[in-house]
Amino acid sequence: MPPWHRHRHREWHRRFRHSLRWRLVALFLLLALGTTLVFIGGTRQVIATGWRELVQPLFKDYVDRLAAEIGSPPDIVRAQALVQRLPIAVRIEGPTVNWASHVRVRSGYDPAVQTFLSRTTADGHVVRFGLGEWHTDDRRHVVVGVALTGLLLLLGLAFAYVRHLFRPLDDIRAGALRYGGGDFSQPIPLRRNDELGDLAAQVNGMASGLQQLLEGQRGLLLAISHELRSPLTRARLNAELVAEGEARDALLRDLALMRDMVSDLLESERLAGGHAALQREDSDLQALLREVVAQHFSGQAFALRLDPALPRLPLDRARMQMLLRNLLDNALRHSAGSTRPVQVLSSADAQALSLVVRDHGPGVADADLARLAQPFYRPDTARTRSSGGVGLGLYLCRLVAQSHGGELRFRNAQPGLEVTLRLPLPGAPAAAGV
Image 1 (cartoon, rainbow, N blue to C red):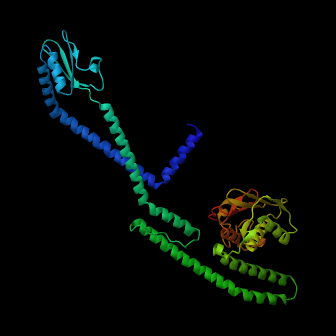
Image 2 (tube, helix red, strand yellow; image 1 turned 45 degrees about the horizontal axis):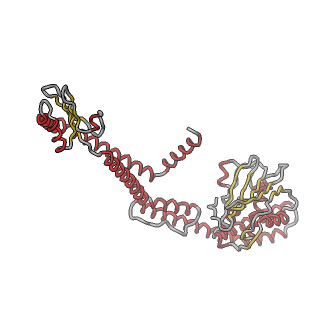
Image 3 (tube, rainbow, N blue to C red; image 1 turned 90 degrees about the vertical axis):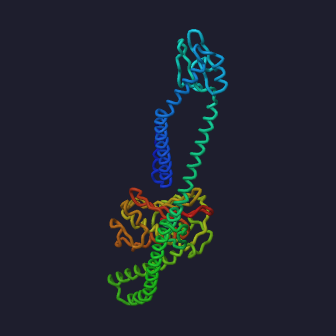
């Protein structure tokens, strides 16, 4: 078996095992086939028993009467009369008479003329009786065609019914994906009043509870963040009056960190509203990148490989600059000690524009990749608060990307971490996010 054929077979087998619909249809067909075989086998056994005990004696007596009517020695005229009156074939073999009623019978055995019984006359002739020329081939083809058509129709009806039966599972799956992505605007439709309908209602209830819990947490976080801004401002003003020294500098750094944290929390709540919070305008992402490098990282070295033919996109310039600044700052902080500069590459395909930022630091564990863009999450190794940041930078980057319909991807580049920003081109479907 060729490798591609084995791969296709394994893929088909995996899909079949994953599909509950097709497994139920296969079970239905196997059950129908097994029932048919059992019925046919039982019917044949009943017919065979009835043949041996009832029909065969009567049939033998009838054939004896036919042989007696032909006579001994066999009379060809009487045999011809029998063939004309009854749908039978007669063949006579003997010392004086050799005759067959049908051409096919003269040439020997033919499936259309089956010899059932034979009789030997007193003068040594053998008279064989069988079925006449009955056009069974055409009828057999018709029966086979009707049976196959019925089987295909049965298969189609079974699949249609199973698909209708499990249609709520498609709705539940789509709803679970929406809820997992944070979209609670559209509940799962309740199509039927059965166990699957109850399951959909329970999932909707669970999603409603989660939405209320998340909204309560966001409201509390937003309120606390707002309330902290005024005390932080006063504390910073008071810290400015302290005599210069290490204690003052440390206090100002901590206050600046708290101020940035509050600002990031407020910004994350605004971005949680999705694209409605954006102020888009036609922008060149690479020009925004160069502006960010010039304003915030003028003394740093970057390896830029940018495609000059990239299209312009409708972007929120301020928030996209924040995303680029956070990505570059994250890469620089975690490339400390590396002699290789941070790499930035841009490209585009038929669906999206991609911007890749790669550092050459220690990277992160594979198990931590999926959690990098969670709020306040920092891996234990090499990425700690002492190196800067509170775990909100990549979270804000993800929110900005998602609000633009894009996504943020993370990959260990060995060495270093590679972060890919993908923004959909106009007319392309939006990404599901990370």
